[in-house]
Image (cartoon, rainbow, N blue to C red):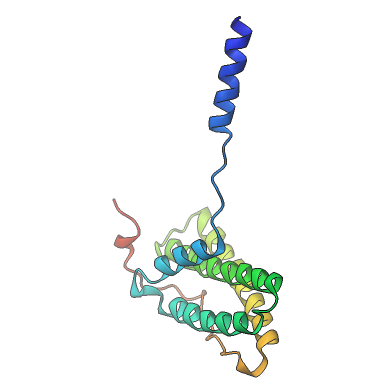
Length: 155
């Protein structure tokens, strides 16, 4: 009897604790990133990159509309690009906080990796769009920014 109660409890507990959060769809990810990118004016270059790349995405999506698999892949790439911009923003916030400890290098590395991923996706869109691709201005992650950190870190 005790074994039955324990096994039922474990089954319920595993079902409760074993649940995974549902993954966000690409559209939800993009909407969330856009909201976060545009919450302050400290990142106008990232906002501008987002807007231009969104226009490129919409052009490319229109061109690929007849191929649902291509549209799915394109949307996933666009969401990955948006997420890369979000990662760059987060990294720049932590670097701007003037942390001279072990983590600053990790945040700089994260920004570099995200910028590289964004550049790869830009290159792919450019290759697919050809002359109708609108170029993205360079994003500088090397220069420390003057950011109003109070809106990101509350004491």
